[in-house]
Image 1 (cartoon, rainbow, N blue to C red):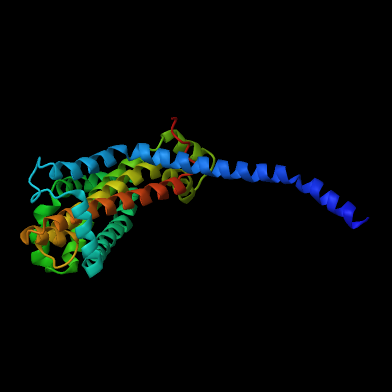
Image 2: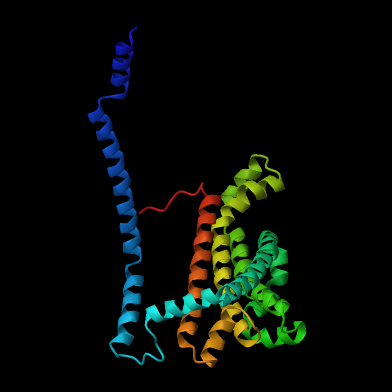
Length: 289
């Protein structure tokens, strides 16, 4: 076969230059369309947030409120940028994240297994019911002075506060998750000869996961709430300390940026937990649109 014939065969296999250009153009158009649709979805979901930020920027500049007490959003971001350049922001964020994550993970490691056992064994649940009700109805912030007196003003008291505040959403939702498992599923598994360990791994735990994750997400919100409050009272670092110190120093833009920082951390943490929930429960059918 001559070189000319081989070249002709290659051109036929790859298509004409016009065909190749059309394919490339179609791929680029599809990718561009996907990006535009993605930005459109993000824009729709963020419309109210963007509107709120626009109102926040406009209201002080129009003189509708005193700019001293409510600075424009752009000034708040500028104050945050100054904190980032000085390194103070990173230290405060790192301190808060370390305390919150430590307390949260300790609470998950302790309370989820306890909730599974308590929910499965009814007698144990009845025995612990009163103490659980008393403890969960005692506000964590009311116990903050007690924790400080017993554990000192250092890191241990703050982490313990986070553990205490996260414990009850985790424990109660885990107990409810186990008790709400369909009895027919349990009976069917036992009829098919499932051992207790197989029953727990294959039936109880998968059926309980959705409700357990509700408790985990509630606990994550409680962790940041209680941590910030405790940092406002007895700390020299952290976002709570940044907020209260900025208020006392009348650095109002920094105070608002600290509040925004807590909100952003909470949203990121919640998004991570939602992604983890979807990954662990891929078997769960998506809700109808």
